[in-house]
Length: 202
Ligand SMILES: [Zn+2]
Image (cartoon, rainbow, N blue to C red):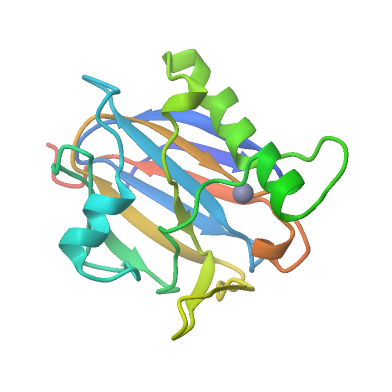
């Protein structure tokens, strides 16, 4: 397939990009055990965004993988997962933010975060920080205990693991190499992103 665009996200960074319907987004973990947060908005109207709630409703599972559709807040398909070499991602938790580190991890001083990196990456497309929803946290490994307690475990991804999502509409996309120690087994690694041309296009 033709690569239209390739991004190498340095550790604790992010980017914004556009993708057209039919194109495919590949997110690669080049070193292993690294999470990438993904959000997206309809290009025609950014008030339509990738919805954790709608997606989990229709999939009837919190563990999304090959064959699942990711839906917008307006219940329209945004992405289809066409390939997934890991099979464990999270769609329950928000992108790590400055407040995640002060409230949850008691960090003092500035700490890089996915929320800030998404805000920065999406700003050129006119998307405000308040519009950023729960992210699809690629490679993030969250277990739910019978009590309902959540356990954030090291990602199951190994060097070169990837997920490929087909865009079901034209979108503005934000993606990061996550900045939270706990989600990434204590070490920040890069994330590679590729956009492929629509394989069915003439
Ligand atoms: Zn993060």
